Structures are given as C-alpha cells and as structure tokens.
Image 1 (cartoon, rainbow, N blue to C red):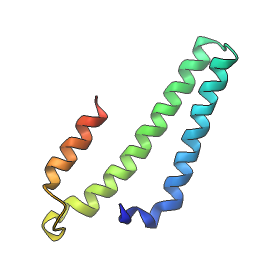
Image 2: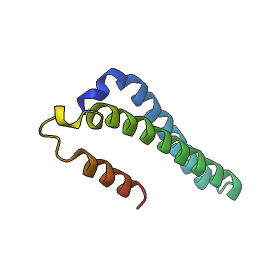
Image 3: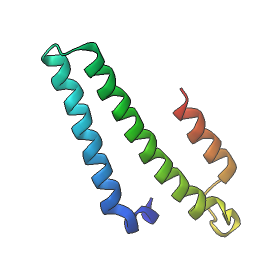
Length: 90
C-alpha cells in the first residue's frame, strides 16, 4: 500500500478521529448514556469509516485499476475490487 504514503498524514488523521469516536461510544455506554446518544455516536463512527474506505478505495482504483496491465503482480484487479466490496457488505 505504498501509494498511500503521499496521503499518509491525512489518512492517519482520519483514523485518529475515528478512534476518538469509538472512545466516545465507549464513554457513553460506560456512563449508561441515553440510547439516542449511543446511536448518534455509532452512526457518526460508521460514517467516518465509510469515508475512510471511500478515500482508500478511490486511491486504489486510480492507482491499480485504471491501468491494471501496468501493475504486474497485482493479480486480477477487478477481482480485488470485488473482494473488497464484498467484504465491506458482510
């Protein structure tokens, strides 16, 4: 995943925000917060994860699938993309 190096700091910042959101879910649950608070925290975290997935997936498509023949050793690029999408929806 060397192509992510150029956006490494942005990706790490996203992951750190997601970690903060997961910590917020834990806090609300520990404090026996309102169900609405828990649901809001979970949906916020899910949205952040979806956003991260979109950024990494788009970069993967642009880097590896646009000119898949130029990347020997990458396997079948279409199958890789299908596998990633299937794993997301499990």
